[in-house]
Image 1 (cartoon, rainbow, N blue to C red):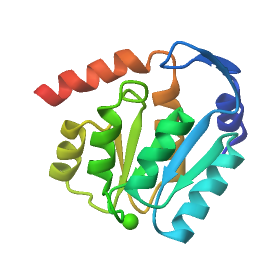
Image 2 (image 1 turned 45 degrees about the horizontal axis):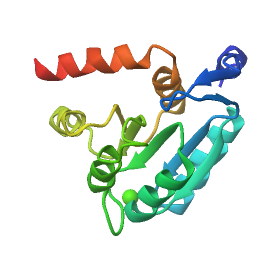
Image 3 (image 1 turned 90 degrees about the horizontal axis):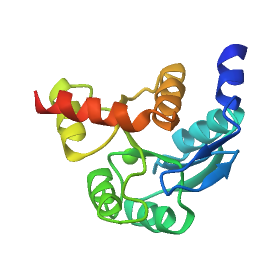
Length: 161
Ligand code: CA
């Protein structure tokens, strides 16, 4: 992680959340991952980048935590106990208060068809494991930026092609 990248991540001191409230840093990220070592690594990297981190180890807990804590963004493994990543995302998307939370899937499936299916199902972005952390941070920052809404629209129009 370069210094300029870290400075960039701290440059937004307050922003308008998707619920229209001005929230202050640190931004909150929900990490949904059942593999202990991977979850710890994600937490460590994200905290180094100034995020506060919530954890869930299965899909059911992920939905409950999102409903309660309103994370700014969710990093979600696809293969999870109880409810998988797709199921958890569906339930979050149906929820009026948290339905628009950016969700980034993490998956070992690198096939373009798997990625297209995930985007069509409603995730905002898709990262292939093993995770490239520089890329992960730039994807997170992109979805937290003030113009992420118009980028979502762009992505939706791409999906329709
Ligand atoms: Ca997993």
